[in-house]
Length: 438
Ligand SMILES: [Zn+2]
Image (cartoon, rainbow, N blue to C red):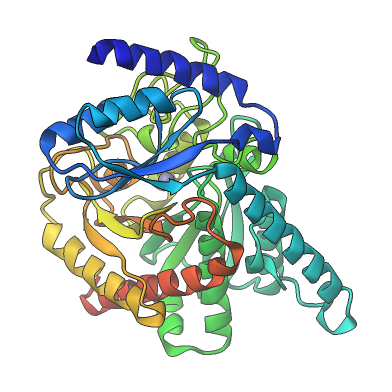
């Protein structure tokens, strides 16, 4: 019975993935997001069995911690039956995804109109970044922001190309620091690896700008960070997927690479890193949301980033932070096993300081801990690779707002507060690392 239901879900899941390909609101009709909370090992394993076929917005990773999954008109009956036969209680988190996507679009259109009016007034015409964080920006606007920041702060910013995406978009990062001498310890920040997590590139660019304006305004803490570290900031590692979420399907997660063996597109770039690649919590089914890719580093975006780190930053990279949403977590390795790293106490201590700081401004609660606190692993992620293969001692995954009420469609008015609190956490952690003699 269990095998049957799995196969059926797989077929329906694949059909669904093929059908969804136009930017039409009706494609979100009657998609629902439900929240489950596994209370024992059996329920946990049952949910993990679904992970290959169902789109988990928030994966099940710990008993008694919530997981969110999206159900479609095609599979909802089957999933409900699967859950109830295993006594897994659920609540409906989002009753109709169409409404949430519609609201997000309306809000962004309104903001755009308001900003156009503002920009046409003389006093603001010269401000290059007015309004950038009042809405979610497209690839081109993010590229332009990097150019503008480099032009505005030529001594502090260098825009660096490190490769091309599958569809041929340039992959660029910003190196930010005062007196960069290629010797300073490096803080590497990776944004936008999962396409639909729009708050990630928004926060990462906000943080870059905060470093620059803080330095300009002689903020003592930021001055210290800018003088101690070189920041390497990738705002958008998966531009193909990101553009697809803006033009075709808001909920796309993976890359957009074409698979030889399947009509399904893309791999999960955060299961594609070459450290314990293909282990637990991954799938070799190209239609799965957690598909590993054909081999480690098969995705050009992941290959380009990791090659750049190994070639140019090896031995200097001290901190790596991969920025995702949602759930409000700050996690550290390992993700592939429940064993602790030798640096567990240090990683844990810094995560506590960071999450305490993140709670101060708006009382947002972020949970910190090891990625696999119990048993339920996800192998091939960036933070494990950074720690295990690139020997970056402070390696983290930051899951930004919220805790599920909007999911990936975090309202644009939360971009700035989210970025402020997350930036507070980063600054506090980095200052503590300096205090600890790096
Ligand atoms: Zn993610």
